[in-house]
Image 1 (cartoon, rainbow, N blue to C red):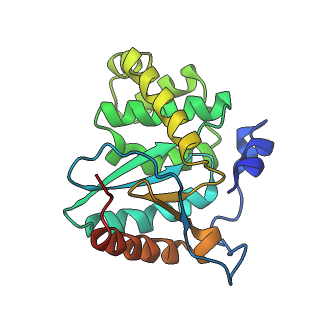
Image 2 (image 1 turned 60 degrees about the horizontal axis):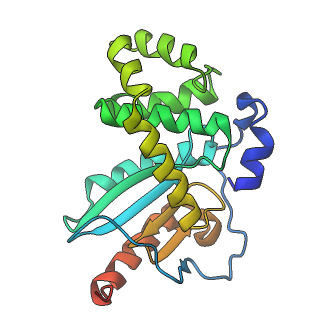
Length: 215
């Protein structure tokens, strides 16, 4: 889902639901990745940073997620994986990004990440609102008081600013997008499929190992 399409539909979050299983390459004969010039600095010292840019309203992100989880289980030891929620200056996406980071810092991502996709896209739960988050968290067996304290914390504000900065640094135009070592990006719009995206990530990792960043 590209940025323009996402923001057009965000007037009502329910409208983000669409056919999740079909992602076709915009240019089948084109390159399967893009090289970033200049490269974006990374923070994973001694490891290769791989980022997934996503957001919870995106049906393609939801379709990609199970494949990504399988890839992560076989992820090489020299790789550091990070999720970064797309915001694009939109209040609803910012609220969903806040929810993601709160799940992350409270240790609830593995338990609830997939459920958030379903809540937003299938059940139309207003998880872009504070009341919606509090009610949904309680229903999923999480202590709402401590969760909401984290949700409103300064640390989350810093994470949101960093996510927005990362999207600008990478010139993010659509999700899901994968970034490798701050030097390359790839997505289904370039590879033709979600499976192809992960294969391209593996190829880019092999290239990075042969051609490490200059110090």
